[in-house]
Length: 361
View 1 (tube, rainbow, N blue to C red):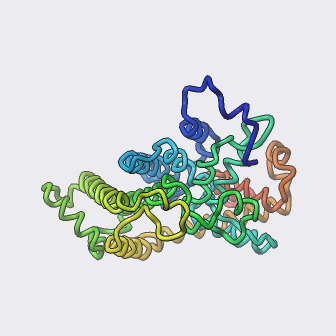
View 2 (view 1 turned 120 degrees about the vertical axis):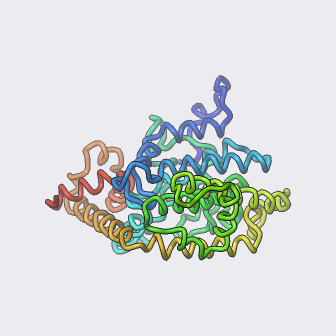
View 3 (view 1 turned 90 degrees about the horizontal axis):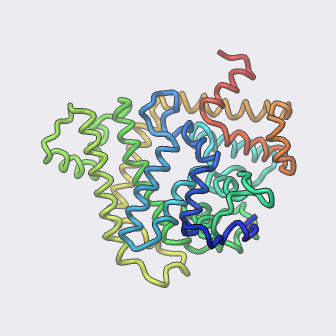
């Protein structure tokens, strides 16, 4: 699974670098296209202007490339990891993953469900692109970055083989750590943007954050009124991203050296302790005011019930799964195959199928 036929790997005639080739294979994968209709915060059917997993992945990629360029790292590797870091997400965001995790554990699967590991499964096993082996045939560094980009890297359910191969007690590449922070920068900024646009959070809610107050001062100096909603939201988001990126660069440049990859602490890519505290407080505000908003909770509850309903239906009647899917994954255990299938679905299709199977309009 990890070391496929090298005839498909080191082609002298290929004009691309190995990591650029990884990026291209990810972009052309079926799983990447599915991200277009998967939830970030707002269900996809809520409107055409809110972020999805696809737009989020693109934004993370852009931030990660910019940071990597300034730190003298490999931009293509960072981009490949960023574009694939959410391939393992279920429909309906984190609640879909939580539902699958609980279901699998109920059925005796100690490993449950974890979206980073599922992303690794997607690119190393579930995607079918070659006759000789499964997966997208990605480089070791990209696979490592997908599996380990989110700290802590070591998970109790991962096999000893993966633990030994990827050295889960140690830092991954700097590019993988950049992606983790780029992910954080992207989702904070665009969740605020989408939250303001939806009306579920207000500027007054955000003013409870010292970090946002600092950013608002920069917007105010440009003479932009809060009533000019579209421009105001854009400038707020732009200043927030810039502030976080420049702060990360200032802090991280002094920490990069040849010793860091053989260590476990501290993380060399990040923010100074004062800013880390401000970010944590802002995340808490977003959790309380946006992610726990009753409108979001209602939609996510419906999504969670859809995931559970689909799983039970497929378990009771496996013939509901397509013949092609059952044939392709005949060697997988039934519960894991069903979880893989549900993970591949978009929000729209998962809800449509759930309503069809249970006779709901």
